[in-house]
Length: 76
Image (cartoon, rainbow, N blue to C red; front, side):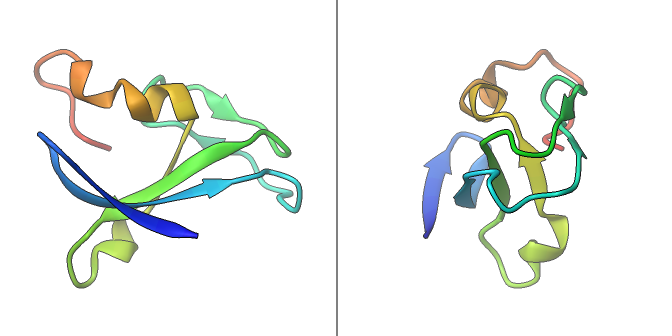
């Protein structure tokens, strides 16, 4: 189930992924580490028309702490 979250970095559509049916590894933009297949995580994208093209997979903890990232770090 998708939800919209508002934060200082904008509005985001967020989806929790159980990892059960997944067979692909992703790179988390928060820590730049691999999200291994089967690991529960979060998928998010900007809540504007066409934002789904910027969808990214994040570790859940990295997603929660993204606004604390240092200066010069992009949101992806």
